[in-house]
Image (tube, rainbow over all chains, first blue to last red; front, side):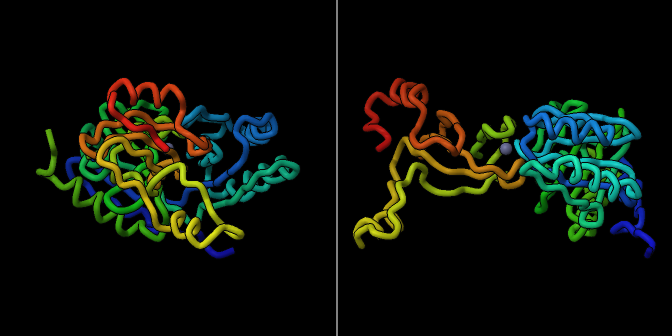
Length: 184
Length: 107
Ligand SMILES: [Zn+2]
């Protein structure tokens, strides 16, 4: 097996907030009927909970399930666990109209941390961060690319985007978080 | 700036998160239709000064299509509703009629 490498190998910048490429992360896309009992059972089998609309909920082993659309979930887990979790979900849902794909190597994850972390993203996303609750999954754009954002800690936001635009996203995060660029 | 509430995920977003899809509630004329019907289906659009029904896609969000009713003059949004709707919901039409008494209707 070749060594798994994240898009930017953990690149980090410290400005008025700290922006970091968070390293390899397990991510699985699940498309299914979210109201079906089979979906709930499949998730439970991997220690995952079913989120409500626009929620991200914690499961076992530090795993999370985020609501991406009325028929799509994003499972977040340890990178090494992703193949087994994806296989387990697929096996459990093999009689359903469902799709499971391990997208860990197709995505990048960033963290934006610090007391003014919100302000880094306020400049990049058309989102009112004052009303973004903990446990809410917000799909939006970061400047010109698609992103999903949630509060992953008391003073930390996580952002996931496509791996192909990781360099672009780090660029905008670094500029937006530069010292002196605070909004208030 | 146009702000619409996506009925699929419930979030209120501004225009740059959305992709426009043109006029809503078009009736498709495909194989077997006359040339005139097909031409109308392909090219003729309402373009009203006032109440307009539109298709929008929550492109940077949940990715789903939905429909919206708004005023092309004031940009007032009367409402949004699911794309799986063949005609505007009755309560939305009632709301528009109340706000725009002279409105000629959606057809
Ligand atoms: Zn939406």
